[in-house]
Length: 319
Image (cartoon, rainbow, N blue to C red; front, side, top):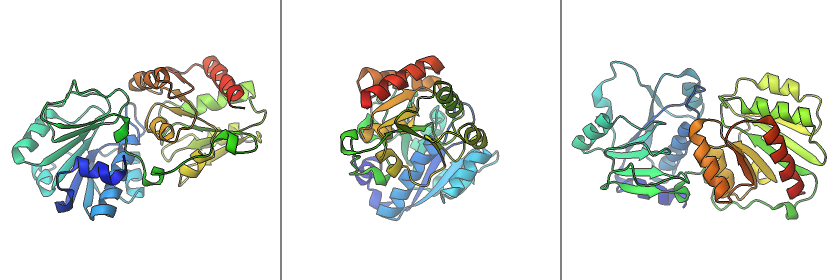
């Protein structure tokens, strides 16, 4: 589904809106990432472009998350003690995009106020009320959601950057040259899969007729270590926070990624993928993608030997 259609499903009479508040957090801390912020940024960009709607991001003061939100050009209000309750009354709609879901007392308060409320939920959190709930997970079911909410469930509602709309990537049969393998583990990679994968590659030396590109996101703090490890390997290129991922993905014959946003993005492009769960709540997602035949294979936890065996089999299969 294209972005304009998704917005019209999320917002009641979206043409009449002027100000939207996004309640979202981001940062390189356990249990958090940059994916929720990126999703809200995509929505905010589309609201500006299609309907000239102003957006504000209400965020916890996590320094790297705040810095990244500002780099995206978003207007930030810090969630701190003493913040007046009236802040919510300034907006025509509130969008919650939080790992563990919004506070249900706050939701019921917004219901009384008559504020249009949207919850973006990936994990089936227990939600007492909302006007609209969007869960684009491959695991999405309606068990945790109120019967009177409008439910947008499943990967058809996954929020993709505009650059993905209508894009078709070339297949291996249409390209020449070495196999192109892209490795990317999110904007911050808090569980250090980038380090683990790079070490594993160097141990096995799976270089024959393969070019690797390792992408490091804006919140990744070990760039120097990765660059030092791969410095003398001609078949490994290090890409530090590239401005646009689409051309890189479209050049890929295989992607190795975690079980978050990137997995859904490359799935939408039909690129062969190996997924590695980087955190507990990604385990059932990776398992579901594997069981539905949507990926070549998936690891539910990091294991160097299993990863190398899986990668080697995929390379042989794709050559």
